[in-house]
Image (cartoon, rainbow, N blue to C red):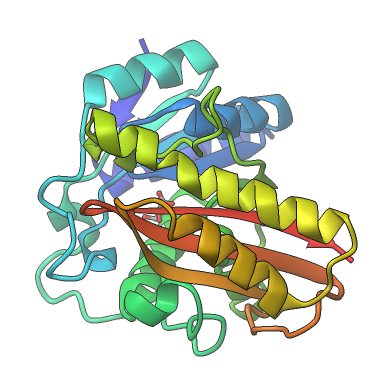
Length: 282
Ligand code: PAF
């Protein structure tokens, strides 16, 4: 069965041994409760590296006080089976005190790329993400790290951070994995009751609509946003956080689709906040 380590020292020691043998290392950072989306990241990491570390850590500093830190789903046993069966070599599963011991005082703050999309309503979220991801990069020192494109803003921010802070790590983005009916896989889908699960399909339907409009030549962000918003508003259980069209690298809003474009949405279904997106190169 796969090795599970809880301490920074043990992970460092294991990775050091691998590197001494000339082996390459891939890292898949996660918060656990793994699904097929995470599995696709692990599969890709296994294909491209000699050894793969999966970190499982529900990072407290990326949750605001009103968010779901306490209720965030956890199942280490099931996660370790998935990691083992997918070919990962090591799980790093630290306790919060291991990552943030008494006296912890440093934050990695991203100045740009955080004003729009999720950064607008979750203003402390990305400094929490950048801080923990920097720590994981320093602990594991991987050659490559794998992130899902579902969190497109997170991926853009991490790519920027790696450039800005000169981490010698290749960042690999992996495509969104969907349920057979279109809903993007997410650990938070587990919060949805039967009625909400049906209502949640409005996210992927609106993504499909936006994608079709863009593919058919619509270049006005306002037109696409309006059509997607109108569609989402037909679902009584849905409450829009944002429907936005931005430059995929800078996360700045654009009026006209041009270059690498990210169309992203966040929608509450009941109390559960879900995100989805599509990218298009114009
Ligand atoms: O995407 C996630 O699951 C988290 O934000 C990450 C990257 C593991 C950092 O806690």
